Length: 376
Image 1 (cartoon, rainbow, N blue to C red):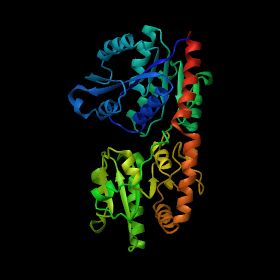
Image 2: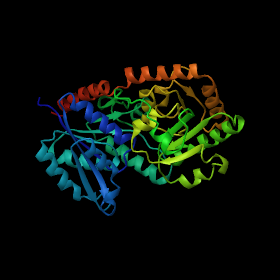
Image 3: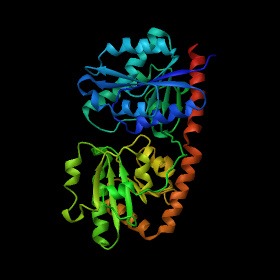
Image 4: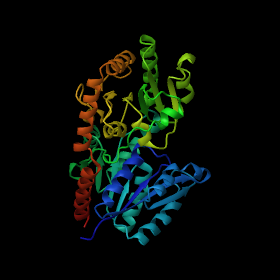
């Protein structure tokens, strides 16, 4: 059997968690001699917003931008067909329901194996429920499906995805290359170098529940006003104005909505503590990023977070929407630096040993080979 040549398709122009995972997988497989390309969609009127395509180019990943007029614009099929022919692609990989639509169309036409990654949905609306229904229909037609958390694996089995076509491979991260603290973000936002800086990263949307972190930070700073604790929230999204309104004027220099931060490493290198307040998650990359930097982490038990954070060992777990518990946990780790250090070291070990990109790339490569054999 000849070597696999992969084409990933992702209908996103944002460089968030799923897009980072494609990047990490592509780079890890590249070290094993496996060639990959990534195709990403952009609305024709908003091409400039395709941050993902720009990032792929910066990382020297073979990337293709597909400009579309609507969600199921069929024009990219011809472009994708040409890409597959020119690059001799022999495995197609979708990363969302819209991408899976194109993967299935092309796989049928060209007799190629089709694989999809299933990460889960974050909103509970009628529109999203329709997308979930559509997603399951597409996944049932795939030759292989990767579930990124055990919860998602069990859910897919319960919805009729055949176990012999399903594999659990958690999200992963390159664990090498952590940089030393450079205080770049601290200087940008006038945060003292010796301050205790807690941070969170993610889209400012309802399912991420950043309001819990802001309220907890306000409470902690009210209880212990002399503590040099600062809070930095990285991300953009529709809740920016709502979240900003929760920050009292007297604390606007201590609780900061930082917007989009391009350099992940600069962000984590400057932190002392990471916090995740999500109501729902697939498998949170941000906890692995914290682990790469040996940061103590506080998290809700959302999705795959419970596969990473063992309470009081590799972090602290708090109940959903529990502002008081989060405030208490923040102050306890601020006051007990030895415990915080140990939690961070344990999270680093788990991240390195269970969620290293090279480990999971090897699992995915084995899965591809099985799918190709079954496909014939």
